[in-house]
View 1 (spheres, one colour):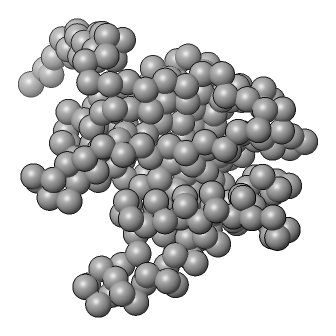
View 2 (cartoon, one colour):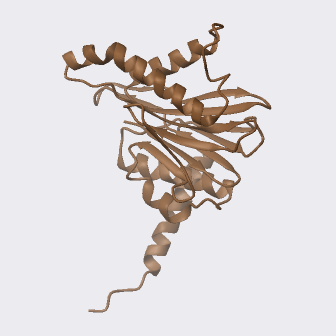
View 3 (spheres, rainbow, N blue to C red):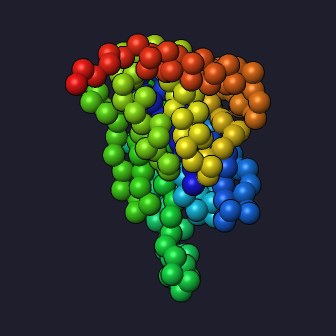
Length: 242
């Protein structure tokens, strides 16, 4: 399982992903699920992946390979818009599904890879997409400013209560990290390190990126303060009068 989230705000986009993968209770491993394509002054494209590690790595591999192809075919470096980027990712997913799908079905498995894709290309506004395993996708808007993939249910309540398009980036970062803390407390298949990236609108470069390892001082303090604050607020709630 995994947990990834992308939040699009008026001032920028916040991306975060965990790094735990598992193939059973005794086979946990760590793999980065955040991929960044950056050409300063031109574009910043961030991909968060969830699903089968073999499937997501194959898609990322195809995208990277096509970026080095000089045949003139479209790729992430030549895409004119973020919509074109989403289409290119979807095409790569379908290519891998066509290659591997029949073999997976022989083992009663299905191609399982999905992505959150966002960023900005020079000349257009920031955009954020959620791409499903079938290759179709939706775009974030004013009513739905964030997308989650993987184990979403534990982190969603705090996101729903706190975040809107107008939330400051720093407050959003805290909220996103609290959502990871809540998820990891309730589901052992989501775990550290946590990769975090904050893209500021129109900057066209990555200035804020950080990885939180196990025992990170800031994350530990945030988790403690959130827990204590939650208990304090709970004690202040009115008592039911029977």
